Length: 346
Image (cartoon, rainbow, N blue to C red; front, top):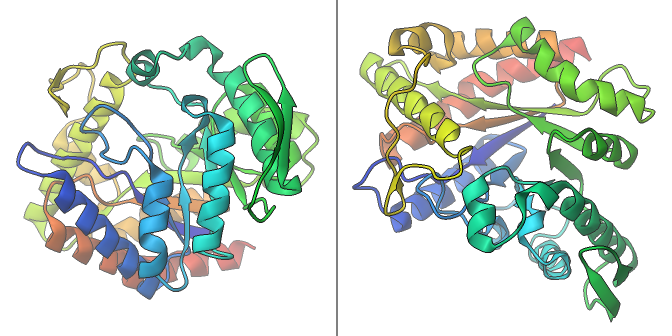
């Protein structure tokens, strides 16, 4: 089982500045490299404080010389927002910068305001991703691109880059994309929200059915779970982490709307009807001491049998010191126990 440090790179409050987020992320990735994480992922979002990372491949390039062992990748390249011929070349460049250490996540995107701002039809995102995926596969396996599709028409274009397809991960819920992921042997990235263990089985079933319909025969599909966790023994830190998680949930809901409430780029989302209480999050979410986090994530492993865990710790607004300390505890106290659980199941 792979364990990844996910880097959303949010601005969690008005006083936080992008340069601080960038510096903290770079330090977090270096720490993850040292304490045994397998992958560092970088998100892609635009035009809001949800993430300052508009180019995950630039973060890969930034962190490549800062690290030795950890693999690096975008989670995900929102391919419909790119010209895929540009994307295939930049992925090839990243592979030169970190040979053998690049992993690739692609996705269709889901935030209407991003597509509207770029002038791209959100309803075409699945078709755009399919065509972009065609071009990525062609360029990264043959070293050339020539393509005649509905959205992209590319004359013969040789690429001055190595023709290597990195390990592929997909974020997208369209059945045609999931079926294609099955044929490509890609790992599906899913976020079951506030459901853990057996409660999250419906989220797995939703992606497993089209994966198996495409011909997958193995016992467990390649499945990546996204989880939001914070490891701390300090009750005050845990409560602030729960507050940060609640704010993150509100932002996630708002970003699914056409016009998310913003003051400048800073999201300003009021409490939502039906949202969990802080006390509920403190009791049920993987926030708090290492043994509690281990118990909750062990339930995930035993019920869902994922092949990949993507773990995000940067939602609290607590600052660099507390965030890095939580990541260190995660790597040193939690991951070894989870690897033992996964090893016993396999």
